[in-house]
Length: 500
Image 1: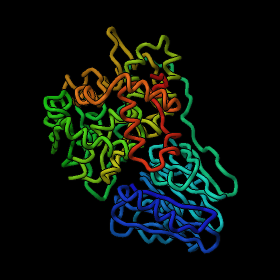
Image 2 (image 1 turned 30 degrees about the vertical axis):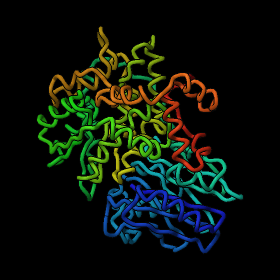
Image 3 (image 1 turned 60 degrees about the vertical axis):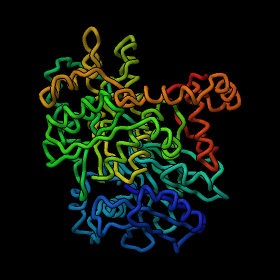
Image 4 (image 1 turned 90 degrees about the vertical axis):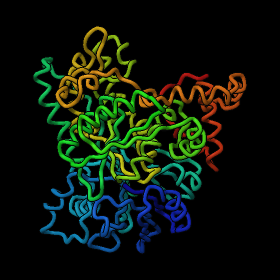
């Protein structure tokens, strides 16, 4: 996991260095820069060393010194790719990034059909620039223009000071300086299969998720798992524990919270090395500006869930450099409460697909920014492309079952042997609810917010579409922590568009 930045059409090293400095939390281990001698263009890189810690610094160069790559993310099949290229290319590192570059040298933009991972990268190739972002948008990338030049960076805070308008690089897309943007992937719109027998789906789901977890255990540095005590994180930890010993797990919450209690139970069951941290209102109040700064959002739901994510990431960073998380399960298997109100299976199926396509600038943004705030890499097994395809194939009637309705039923049934019964069938709670953050915030903000003043503030900022006094409070902090918030504001995604 790293941070990348660059400019094409200019040799403004000062701006690129400033963007790189803004990304130091994403890559505290090393930095590097490529300055093209063919055209005006610069690639910059901040490195968090995960694979080949000693030899994988970037940029990495191709056969020609005018060809170089900077990349953020992980390629899970890079060893197979490397093996297939080794008779034709000399590898100078054992990093996954070098495999991307040599595969590009061999296949051009078709490299994107062959790599399996989460990534955002840019390749300077003579007088051309080629950039791409992974299919789901697990890894971030933003771009903008300045005096006819093309700028890009891993985070909004890095690029916003240098561009009037900033846009998100679309997931599953590539950019070529000669031809512009094009798409190479979209979440498949697959019809559910007719098979509605759970026994048909259970072995398929089990094999697919286990494979997704195992491939994400690839690391040359210590690895662990978030453990809220909910179904999703507990399943990931349970599968990882079968293949990783020891396994570190991490949980946070207020004193006596449900998440802390449930996580302890799961940890004992799995025999993990468990770490927990109790958060307080005082510390949340102190850290809230920092959390919003790293999150790059004032969305109420996103900020709420970012708070426990921030503290869990901080705790994990004391022990590991890579963390597994449970993001994506709710969108694939109908885990949110509002799914239960959808009247028919066809509509639910469409809404689940839409939910997956919107993850890149909501939940995945939270996971990326808050883990990277503490220089650790988050990996999301549920969003493996084969898991997404399988999720589309499983009939909706196997996801919401019974009366009262049990959400994610097929997922629970498939893995009910791995975890204690009270965890497998635990009622879904949001990260911020189970950790006690919502109650803590309600108490903390009661004296800090004047509802009438908040309504006036919302009227003063109509474009922000502020939905509550609490969100007005976050928006005020947001406006204070960024020197130039306007380009960032244009990229704030919302769970709901209902204004105050």
